[in-house]
Amino acid sequence: MIFLRPACLSLALVAGTLAAGDYDALLGAVKKSWPNCQTIAVVCDSSGSRAALAALTSAAGGMKLMVVDVKGPQDMGKAIGMLSGRKPDAMILLAGDHVAGDGSSAATFLIQRMAAMKVPTATTTEAGVKQGAALGLGSGTGGKLMSNAKVAAVAGVAVPAGAMAL
Image (cartoon, rainbow, N blue to C red; front, side):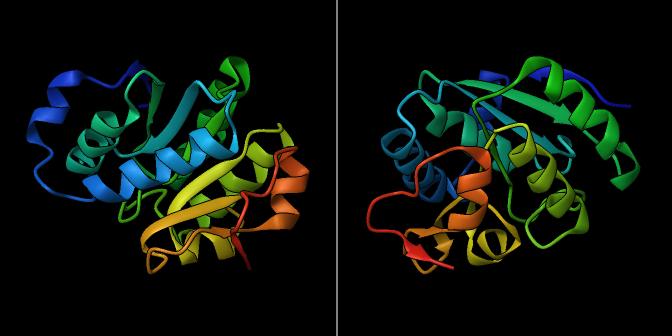
C-alpha cells in the first residue's frame, strides 16, 4: 500500500543521532543551490526508515516534506504517479532504506523519472550521486559537496557552486 502524508513532527522525537548532521548539511546545500525549493519528496518504507525520516523532518525546518510510503520495488510506478501529480521541488534519498535507498535499482528508477519531470534528487552518499542524484553531501560523500552535472541539466537545476563533479 502506498500513501502520501506530511511527515509527523513526533518522528523527530525518536530520531536520536542517526544522520541528523547529514540531513542538516544536505538540506542547507539544497536551500543554497536551489533557493526556490520548498517541497521535498521522500520515497521509502516509512516504518523501516522511521529514524532517518525523523532526522530529515528535524532538518527540514520550514520546508514541506511529502512522504510516499512503499513496501517494495513493485510500488515505484505508483509512487512516481503520485509525485507527478503533486510535483515536489526536489526528492531526497534516504541512505539505508531497504526499498529505495542509495544503490538500489528502485532509487535509480526514481532518480531518472524525477529528473525527467524536472525534479532533482539529493542524497547523503557518493553512491547516490553516481546513480544520478544532482546533489550529494554527507558522511557518505566524506563531507564533500558532490554533483552529477548531467542529471542536474536534465532536471533543469544549477550545479552547486564548488561541487565536485562525478
